[in-house]
Image (cartoon, rainbow, N blue to C red):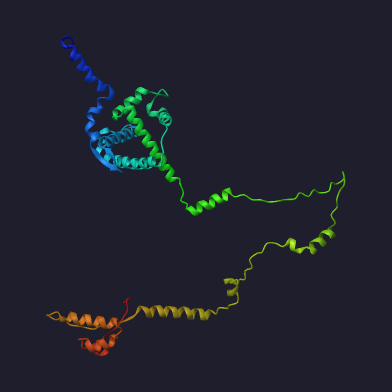
Length: 328
């Protein structure tokens, strides 16, 4: 059947086949399928577009990295929706760094890109760079060697700028000028070399102790030690203070019993009340609010109880009901 097709193809048909084959050879088959994604915009950074094709390629790189790190993972577990957000954010960050680096006049030498590709174990076979393995890998991502080199240059440039920012310290202009001034400053000085008289061979000089002491006493200003801090302080020692105090056993027991009685007395309380009977119209609420306001203002509880309490048994006693012991 194929032979019949070849035999029936004329001169113009063969030229048509050549024209069809040329784009596939130059751009690859995948470029025809990714053409729509390469035009659609996913995001924009400073006027530079990030296409859906770039996002898809970034997702495929992430998928490949996950598969390489976890060899036993099921590819079906990796969700494209989970990869989309990080992939897009990484592209945006890289594009921001790349845009800034371009404005600063930074660039990446082609020799560096070639060295990175050569050293990448992903593209090595038997310890050496394999062009076929490299082309197969980037072809799966929809790259050509030229577009992949541009992508790699952008990644290297963004990484270089990010490391530079992270390792750069903050310094004001006056601080920088001061530091440079210290580094570049010079000093002018003069000196005089006074040689010692040459001693005779075998001669020995004896230093008289009395002469040394006399010179020292005559020039005390030459041997003054650096000034030190003089501190006046008082030392308080618990042991020294306690040593001068005599404690009587009866006084100690009396003090202890006093504290016990104080604690016991605090546990007993006197309970008092102001009784207001509820009204059907709710007017008792207004009376309660007035009592609360009066107590908050500092009014005497007993006086309010005598005037307002509706309990005939306790109103005359200032509302006092009696003592309350929580232990009983």
